[in-house]
Length: 142
Image (tube, rainbow, N blue to C red; front, top):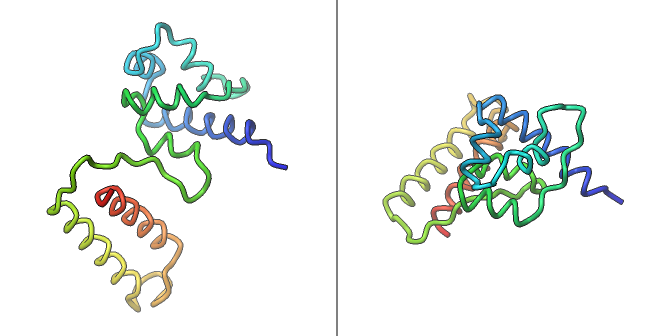
């Protein structure tokens, strides 16, 4: 049986590495997330790679998303493969929907071109790009 706590802690460590790459400081997350001190944020995303992160609560995930303290694409790393956290629009912007549809269809057509990496088959890099466009399309349609 999978150790889900370990999986989540490992993904939190990956998020911390990405925070460092993107130069998102613990202090910034603490401030934006409205925590009293940085200790809670540090417990979830420790600076020391040898330190095991505390498993993040759903309440903390909610707080990080609600306040925008961390980007949704980073927090999506906590989820199983095939799932993403995306902000659903409150109203559909039909111009944005058209742009997202055209963008997806153009990328799909390009992926089937004989000159693409795997010829008429969709390569893994093209598949990833199409998945990202499909997620945007779903977010716009929601």
